[in-house]
Length: 408
Image (tube, rainbow, N blue to C red):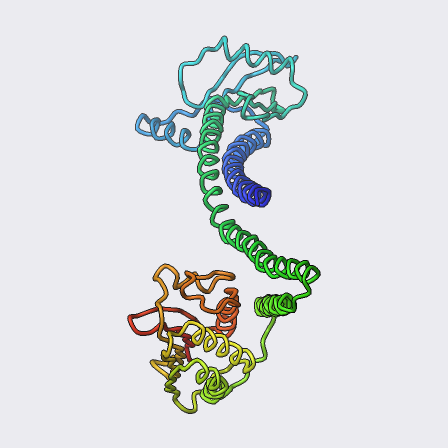
C-alpha cells in the first residue's frame, strides 16, 4: 500500500509540475521571442535601408513631443548611430532615438569594443546577459541597440516566475497529497477488507478442523462413536462455509448476467412457498402480500437465491412463535420487496455493517451456530447487479430487509 501511495503521488505530482512548468516556460519564451523579434526586425530594416541615418528632420515645435512619444511606444530600447571612418574605426556618434543627453565617451567605448570583437555584421545575442545588439551597414555606419531595459525586464520576469513556481510547487504538493488520499482510500479500504476476509475465513475453517482433529484423537483412545458424529457435524459446517465462500466469489466475479423480463410476483410466491415446512417446523406464522403480475428484468436464478437468503435469514432470527411477512408491491415507479420478521431488533449502528462479509451482530441474534455472516453479503451483491438497493431497519415489532428497484 505504501508503494502504491508513493507511485500515485509521484505520478500526479510530476504531471502537475510539468504542466505548471510548461505554462511558465511558454509564457516566458513568448515574451523573450517577442523582444528578440522586435530587435531583429529593427536591425534588418536598418540594414536594408543601405543609407545613412541623417539627423532628424526639423519638426514644428508642436510635433516634436508627438514624434518622441511615438518612437517611445514602438521601441523598448535606445538606438545609437555611429559613423565609421574609411578604415572602419569609430568617428562620431550622430543620433540616438530619445534625444536624451548621452555619455558620448561611454558610447564610444562600447562602439570600439564591438568594432574590435565583432565576428559578423549582424548580432542580437542572448537578451538575458547581453545588453547590446548591433548591425554594420554598407554606408560605414554602426547602429547599436541598448538592450538594458529589455534585459532588466526579462531577468525580473524570470525571477518572478522562479518564485511563482516555488509557490505553485507548494500548492501542487498539498493538492497532490489530498488527491492521492482520495484515490487510495477506496483501495485501502478494499485491501483492509480483503485482509479481514482472509483472516475471518481462516478462523472459521480453523475451528472445525481443530474439532475434527481432537475428535479423531479421542476416538482412537476410547472408540466412542460420538466422536465420529462430531467429525461429521464439523465436516458439514466446513462444507457449508466453503460453499458460501464459493458462492460469494462467484457473486462478486465481474461477469454479465443474462437478464430477461420475468414475473417477479410468481418468483417471490414460489420461493416463499418452498419454506412452508420450515415455517411450520419453527412454529412461525406467515403473511404474504404479493401484488400480481409485477415484472422485472432479472436473472431468475439469482433472484431465487436472493429470496432464499433473505427468507432463511428471517427464519433464523425470528422470535419463538413469531411472524414472518413477505411483501411485494409497486410504489412511485419502484418495485419494493420486503422480508420482515419479529425478534430482537438490529442496532442502528449495525444496519449497514450486516451486509459486510463475515460481519456478525451480537450473539443473541445468532441462534444458528452455522451462521458465518456471508449470506447477506451475497444478497447485497445480487441486488447491486440488478441495479437495486438493499437496506435493513428495525422497529419495535419487526426487522425489515427492503429491496428497491427503480423502474423507468
